[in-house]
Structures are given as structure tokens and as C-alpha cells.
Length: 222
Image (cartoon, rainbow, N blue to C red; front, side, top):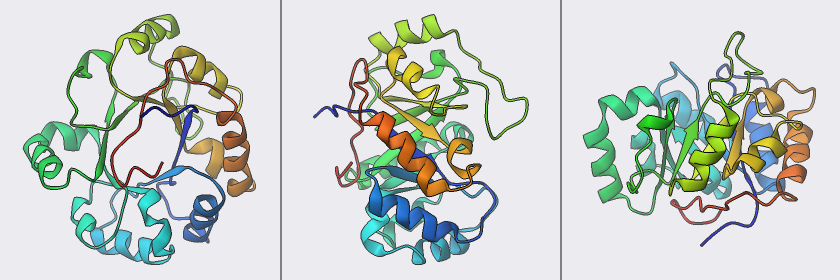
């Protein structure tokens, strides 16, 4: 199965914002997006409390970072593993893939040379930073765009552009061949995050990724 449009992934801000779960719920109710719940330093109980504030029917659209034990308590789309998790817990991730083939698994990469072709462990991969970051000062683009385009035309992985993606840069990410984009600052630094997410989705739904690749896993709902 291939998706005819760019995928839009929204990453939660690292620090909790007022009414954040409510805003996430509104995004998921209104838009066919994936939300990555990322709260560095917060324990499993606090992540579970966050999820409890979002209607259960929206949980299949949420990827939780690192807390894989929450798959047994919530009907999540799946689990995202940081680069540190991936390097230090690879046997655990492979066992999780075997035990939960229905769950979507993703991870983060910062070098093209580290991305394995022909390995179906992850349903999609974040590659960053593609552009100068909006949310992190001094976090600058690390890739040559022509080289990226060549790589993306050849890999069998579904690669998501992360880092500095906004309304102006989204079409450029699509033209390079990314399967989708992940955004943080472009949404959460906006006066109205829900409206900002909607504006990005309006661009995504009118763009054909080159080449289009599948983001599978989880309940295959997105």
C-alpha cells in the first residue's frame, strides 16, 4: 500500500504547555495526522496521565517515545525509539517487533550511512536535521539537498524529514523525495497550534511525494 500524499507528523513540545492534551485531541479529531508524544525526563506514569486526558478513540494515532510498556495499557499506534534507545536496546526492539507485529515502530537517524536498507525493523525513520531548526538554537541543517534527493530515490525505507520544517520548506522536502515531514516548532511556537497544524496539512494533501512510500505499522489507520 502506498500513500498518495505527504504524511504529517506532529511532535509534542518537550515541556508541557497549558491545555496541550486538549490541543492534541483537536488536531487528531480534525486532521489525519500522527502525533509523537515526546516528553524527555518524564516517567511512564506521567505519560500515561497525559494519554488519559485524550479520548481513547484517538490513541491509535499516537506514537509514544521510548515507553514501550504503555503498549499493554493503551491502544497506541506504536513506539518511537531515539537514536540512543536504538543503539543501546536493539535486541529489545527486535523482540518487540516479534511480539507486537501490529505495532508501528520508528526511530531517529542523523547519518545516511547508518540507515539500513532491506531491514523492516522500523516502519518509518526520522532523518535530521534537514533544515535549520525552528525550536533548537544553533541546530543547523546537516545534509546536502542534492545528495539527499539521490539517496531518497534509491532507499527502500520510508524517510521522514525532521528539523526546521515549516510551510515554506515543506514543498522542498517533498521535492527531495521524503515520505513525510515531522514538525515541532512550526506548530507549537505558533499563536494557534491547531490552526498551524491545519495549515501544514493543507499543503501536505496537495503534494505528491516523490517517490511515495508507505508508513505502515500499528493499526494501519494512517
